[in-house]
Amino acid sequence: MRVPDEVIDENGHVNNVAYVQWMQDVAIRHFRALGGEEALGESGATWVARAHRIEYLRPAFAGDALEIATWIADVGRVSSKRCYEFFRAGEEKPLARGETDWVLVDIASGRPKRIPENLHALFKRG
Image (cartoon, rainbow, N blue to C red; front, side):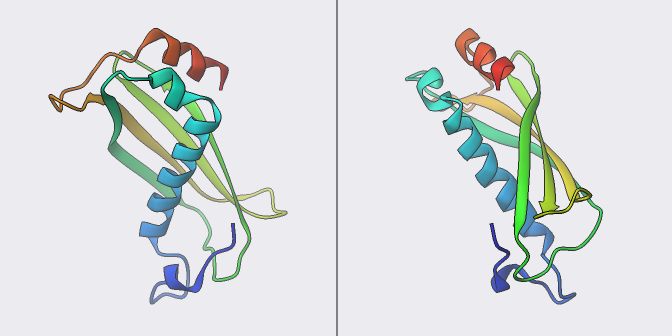
C-alpha cells in the first residue's frame, strides 16, 4: 500500500491512528483469505479487539510504499493474538511492530464465546 497524505500528522509522519486502522484492515483481509468467514459460519459471533499494542521503530512518510505482514501467534479458548510488522517496501528493518488481542463475542449476548474447533484448526494452518 502507498501512504496517503491524509494520514500524515503535524510531525510530518504517519499518525499512530493510521497504524491501528491498517492492523484491523490487514487482519480482516487475512481472516477472509484463510476462509475464516466460512469457518465461523452462522455461529452468531464476531471478533472484537480487546487491546492493541504498537512499537514504533522508524517513521513512515507520505508516498512511502508499505508492506504489512500479519500472522496468528496464539489461539486460546475465546481469544486470539495476532501480530503485525510494517516495512517500507524493499527494506528489511521494520518501521513498526504490533499485536492485537481479539476476542470472539456472541453477537446476541455481547459475551465472549468459545472459538469453534474448525476455526482453531484454520488458525493453526495460517
